[in-house]
Image 1 (spheres, rainbow, N blue to C red):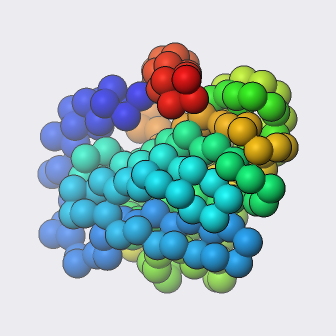
Image 2 (cartoon, helix red, strand yellow):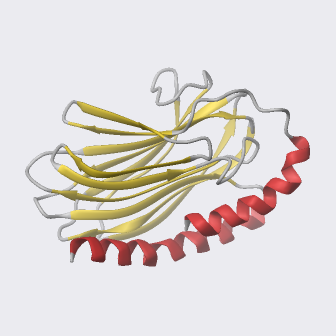
Length: 226
């Protein structure tokens, strides 16, 4: 899903670049993991890429995030985070956050997309998106909760939530996946995206890309758990 989205946004960026001012310095996008009072922040790079693979608390977590300039831009925001998370022992829940700053599209429609499936037991997952006019990574105050999808508790899921923004720039966006798994050995394969929709006709294209992502995530999850 990320590769196809990246190609789509690369084409749009050519047309949008003439509207962009010289970008201000920004913090690198970052992942944040939270469970049972423990927090781990993983800084990404200037290409808008970040990843983590390893044990965290009672979980084994493989996750990656992608945003501008590899995916989207300041004037056409986009963030994507995917994960395969497995509960190793009693504990949880776990939250996976991905955040970036210096977005400048002040008005327009966005889509929050959540796809994936539970493996070896069904738990719950919720995707939330926050907008912070103070342009700071991971802030919950005074950040505004602009969209929530879930909690989802079906074995497989493919959900889209459309919302609008009307704000000042620059601002930050933070995506948050809250995952609760029922027992040791259970796992989830999930992908969450928030994307600015450049026109009404693009909505179906984004939905198609979300569907394509389910198959790839499923194969990756089965390989991990085999």
